[in-house]
Image (tube, rainbow, N blue to C red; front, side, top):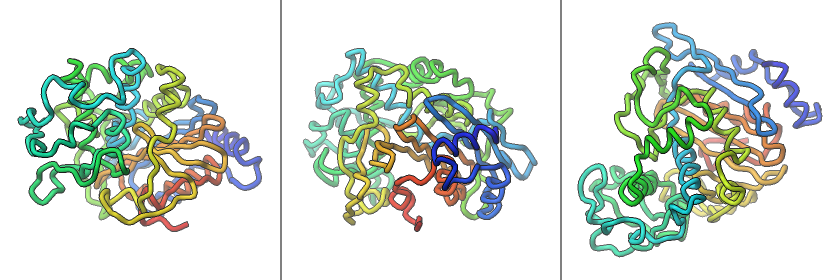
Length: 372
């Protein structure tokens, strides 16, 4: 494994500016930030060249993290779900630019029962202009989640399609389109079209009892252990359980374009809507920014112009999880990082640099706290 990382570093940097990423270096960075568990995969030429796990899946019980350990995928789910939707586009079953009334058998506000309660939009006709492309580019106009609103009710904050504001609510509507509009089961379609395609044996959109034997619990900024949640139903916004071994297979497949037409694969990782916010969070912050990397929303991912050429990334985060996938189109190179400890995000910029060389990844936009 060390040899593969050394070779990749030399390919990327010409063996001049990037040192080989050793296990000792990973452990040193983890110790510096008190990271309990971290898993890392490297993709080169669209092929997986390294998969490793470090630290613990549960510190209190002395259980090690392994490449097969089931970890929380968080919002990496959104990108996997986007890839599944693009398969439906390729098959002529979904039009990315069709307005919502053409995609659902009932008006959106008529869905008034949990988990699909949109009755609060009955007096605002802007729901009619929502399209799958708008929802996939996080330009719906919604808050990230309705429970962040003072009254916990969904509302528009700007005209749909006019600006980027990260929103899990948009992916709930996409799931509604799949289930009520197309009559498909989200969990089954994801399993068949994505997880089975790439041989992802330890991945599911909902809890499986066989996960319990090798499961990662999470750790917060304060080091508090949070038991792994047993999610009872699929959620396009973030219910995927997975492993680093499986995520390596997934992202290698996506970077190769496997399962998608050339047009859909290109569309997924091509700029669809410029991003002009100072940071990803808070999602509705009006603070403007001009990003020299030409930061933009792709379909389920974020795109930018790297010094090497086109590039894209997707993160996944909660109070005890920190995940990141960063891919450079040139050479089809990616680093995939999963952690059951949110403090790992503090070392991701350095780990990515050591694997991929210097990039123009907008870490400050993604994490806010980052200062080079």
